[in-house]
Length: 303
Ligand SMILES: Cc1cc2nc3c(=O)[nH]c(=O)nc-3n(C[C@H](O)[C@H](O)[C@H](O)COP(=O)(O)O)c2cc1C
Image (cartoon, rainbow, N blue to C red; front, side, top):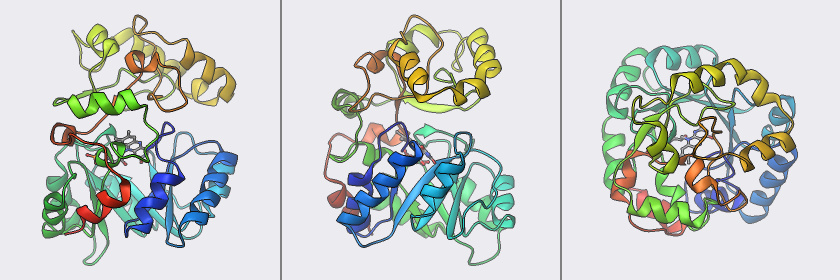
């Protein structure tokens, strides 16, 4: 979980309890430091997630020190030695990843939280992906999994393992802003939008409502057409701005202006993001009403 949410505390707790914890993309030096910090807490494998539109050489160098690299959002291509998993939203993408040498794919369903590549429910995508990939090829399932029963259903349907985001967003170790966590505990509905697309355009994401979504999604769930066009025009440039300028843009963002970045409210971001930033969450948020320790959650998820 990017946006400063999944650091070494969460990843190490998950791995130590028997899962494979994942550290999110962040600047290369910070990523290297997070991997080191995780290694101090656990001797078990650790994964790193890289978002392809933002991954530069330094990210690949840092990520090579993890046990597994998970990539998302872009043409699958092997860029680092070691175990590589690509998260996919379609059969076509899954086949391309397998052909490009991925060791496993994640089939992401449309019910997932955060950025959503899938367009059909996870179990449906799994069935189609399984049919097109060789027998025994590992296919992990993401989207809609928050309980042991969900994991059992995924495995029963042929998934090799379950990938869980939203449930761990609501963990003690997640660096999501405490008020963001509180709102998710109360939420029972999500929206699929492109509203928070400054710097990452044409990338649907699932969120819980706040002032920004109430203000801008009345006519079109994707967001105002002019803002989407501007985000698309600015896309590649915005993603390459120095971190300090991006930080200033995030700090000055306001729910009344529809140019909104993908940065969610975390422990270290301005309070204003609770209303002007994305409150990412998957559909399982309707079934989650507590914040718990990640190790406990991991043990409870195992069937
Ligand atoms: C807050 C949040 C941030 C996310 N950030 C990323 C990310 O940076 N990279 C990525 O590959 N997937 C990201 N995802 C998507 C997850 O990999 C996964 O597909 C999703 O969480 C699964 O659905 P679930 O939320 O219903 O468990 C994110 C999900 C959430 C909830």
